[in-house]
Image (cartoon, rainbow, N blue to C red; front, side, top):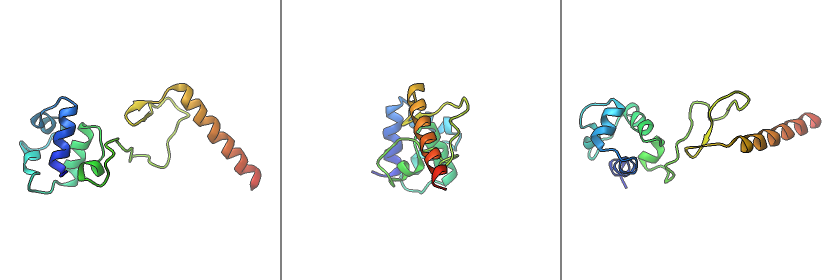
Length: 115
């Protein structure tokens, strides 16, 4: 499946026309249609990925997982503060966050004892 087809599939899933995705992404009129034969710029592809809540890797066919990837802080996520966190596009329940925090604290403590 090419980039255009993946965009079209996700747009349909989100009940959006390709023209609407184009508008929401703020890219040139009919840009997405031109991607049938042209390679999109990385900047425009990222804008479309943001609108469709997915990754550019998915749109390019590098992965079959359309779940968005947080590239902003891929290796460091601050779960101590009141940030809204999600996994595969769904909010993480507080009780799950508490379990994650406890596991991480336990590993950190064990690491400190080994040093």
